Length: 221
Image (tube, rainbow, N blue to C red; front, side):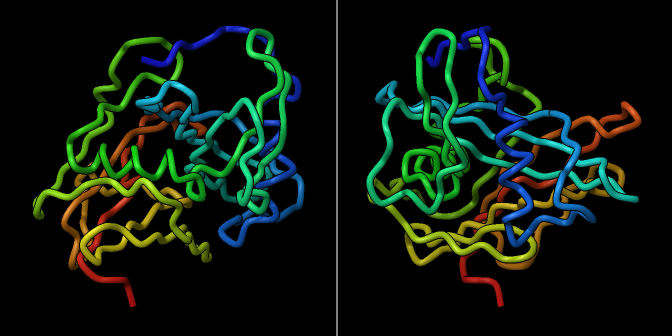
């Protein structure tokens, strides 16, 4: 299990995201300087124990209407060749030293573990406490058993999120702009065979719930 270190980060994760988010095609802010607050999220464990994997939920209140984003992040102890385009930034960790933070939708380790979560082979972990499962994160899968990929895949970003090729000709859709489901009832799109859902805090302190990722039998049109 990953160990959560409660220590200093320079710059902080939110400071990194403040400068990085406006460059994303799915950014909805009215300004180039988002005002971010952490609203939730969870972690996944790297089986090799080398890469930190966090799925952060952050809300931007800079505009007239707040926007909430799912930002998968990976933390590495050295830069990864070929992933320069996905670098969010570097941080100085009070215990681990310099860390390279990457967009997790482009990191093969985090994508493999997200697919393992969908398939029921991985457990979502609490964002802030070591060795504590996050029971608010739910998943389901109704298709045939598959193995998570162990090679990099090509991620495509658009105005709503990120799509990646998945095993058996499926497509993994990661929702970057989060939307609460009415009454907390998940509405899966046609062709969905698996999903991950979770909760987050709204700016008024309430709890919202929605889809984080969906596995499709066919690419979305």
